[in-house]
Image 1: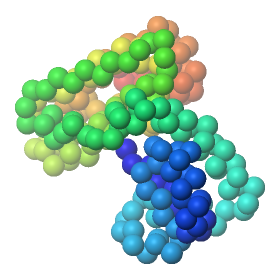
Image 2 (image 1 turned 90 degrees about the horizontal axis):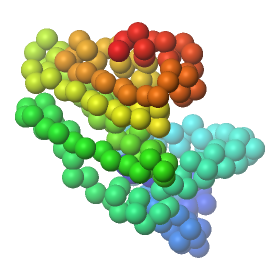
Image 3 (image 1 turned 180 degrees about the vertical axis):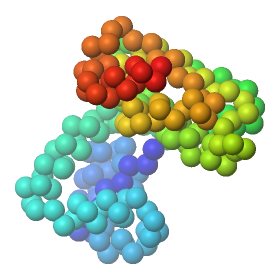
Image 4 (image 1 turned 180 degrees about the horizontal axis):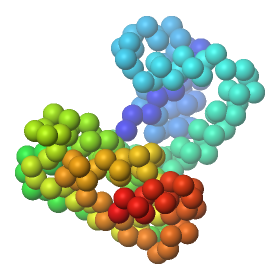
Length: 196
């Protein structure tokens, strides 16, 4: 995961230093004067263009929301964990592979990372399945997601409907249906349950 901050104030050296000191988990800081250096298909460039035209109160709200969501990434342990990538999702296409994702059930800090990991992995596998014969993997891929409702996967109700046809299975283990409804809403929870 790469975290970027952009804006006109990023042209000010003292602001950049303050951000580096206060938010060491930020990977890229760019000012409007360097925006042209980002690739045209850069997601950072796309979102910056949307946010930069926002009204001041909207911008403040975005910053407050971002701060509340990003605080988990400020610990040394999380920064170390996310500073490199040793997992190559492409190995799942060609060889039997087991990946264990363990997190402390008494500390929800890593639930966000687990959500990001599983979300990226599932999206990658679905996208790559389109390059396979009949749009499905020859080696079955199976997820065993214990304590599934401890984290939330964006758009999971849409993804789960197409996974089986790609030879990807999900075993989502949870304590009760109400947990699923709380995380995903009633309609999405019903879709997820019907696809399991």
